[in-house]
Each structure stands twice: as structure tokens, then as C-alpha cells.
Amino acid sequence: MRSTVPVGGRCLRRSPVQIAAARMMGSLTPKKLTGWLTLLIIILGPVQFCGTVRSLSTVPESFRPYLAGHPSLSTAIMIFQLLVGASAAVWAYAAWVLYRREPGSLKSAQTSLLVGAALRIVGSFSIAFFGGLPPDTVRSMIERALPATVIWVAMITVWYLYLIRSERVRDIYAAEQIGSS
Image (cartoon, rainbow, N blue to C red; front, side, top):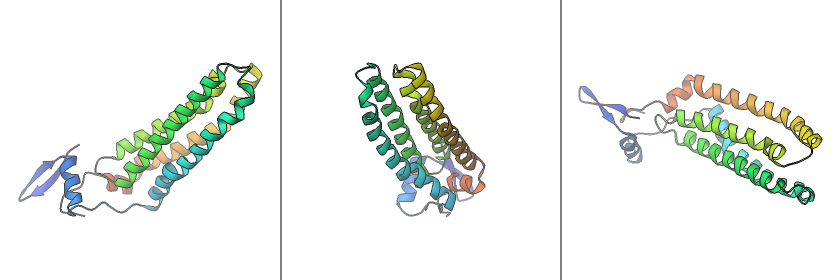
């Protein structure tokens, strides 16, 4: 992404590297975060990270009694850990991108929000689908996971709509001009 910079009577194109250099030299400061954006950064960063660490550490232990009778369960647990861990990493990246407020980076944060959600949702069903558990157990696990999935989808939808519709958010991440704050 390139943005224009007024020089004399004309506008010159500048690369993201040039904009970052201008920001480092103090001639370009990031715009102030809004309250809702700060909340989203906190949710995607430390809140999700702590919740994910707790989930990743407790899930294997809760299935330990069933490992002997279901050989594919350990693989399903690893798939769960991989997908849910990846979702936490992607959301942490989204939080970092949002916090940095680099010009033109909003699309990257929006995409990371959706990718993280997809990983988390698929991960939440991975043990049920790949664990080789009895059909009644699978059905019960899916029934218990559905309400949480609906809540996840609703929450991600609300935050995604906020990121794509908010004029203040668009203004914060718009291509900036060097020399203007």
C-alpha cells in the first residue's frame, strides 16, 4: 500500500517503509485509539491469550481417562491444540496490528479477526469429529459446543461490523500524510 504525501504543490507517493521511518523520526504520530477499539485489542490480546492457555492446559487432562479406549483421541486433542493455539496467535497478531495503527493495516486486522474465529470454531469441534468417540458422546459434545459457537459467531460478527463500518476506525487506519497529525 502506498499513500500520498504533499511536497510543494504536488503529492508524492510514499511506501509503508517510508511512512514507518517518518513515524520513527517523530514527524508522523499514530492517531488516538477509541474506547471500543481499545476494548477489542484487550479482548483479542491478553484476554484471549490467557483463556487459550488455560483451555489448552486443561483439555488434555480432562480426556486422559478415555485415551486407552480411543486411540485417535490423542490425535484429535493435538488437532484441537493446534487450531485453538493458532487462533490465539492470529488474534494476538490482530491485536498488535490494531494497536500499532499503521496506515492501511485495517484490512489485515479484519482478516486476522475472521481467520482466528474460523480456527477457534473448527478447533472447538475437532475432538468430537476426530476423536473416535461413541456417537452418543459426539452428539453430546456437539450439543454442548453449539451455544458457545453461536456466541463466538455473534461476537466476531459484531466486532467485524464495527471494524468495517466505523468511520473513526477507518480514519485511524487510513493512509496518513507525513507532516500532518
